[in-house]
Image (cartoon, rainbow, N blue to C red; front, side, top):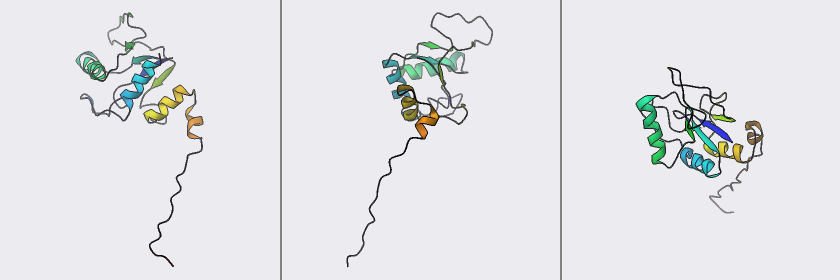
Length: 137
């Protein structure tokens, strides 16, 4: 599957133009998806030096993207903005309608081919807590 992933607010917390703290399990999940042969495209508004900082940050954490802001590594972008429409089957972005699920849910949605609605409508395991007895009769 071809998956486009945003950077700020999706892999890391918003702190643009600086790089925020990693969101829990973001890089581990992306590495696992790459290991499972998904093509991951970094799809971000960052350009120039800021883009390179994001790519380097990810590379330091073991993430090698299939492409960055383009459909495939060899694609030449000929417009001044440096953007093209990405042809991905899935977009992971914090600006999605409904927000960004946690990365554990994102992985399950991809791995188990479940929609957001299917995943969140599953019965949740409830832990049964015994009341503490402070006295005995």
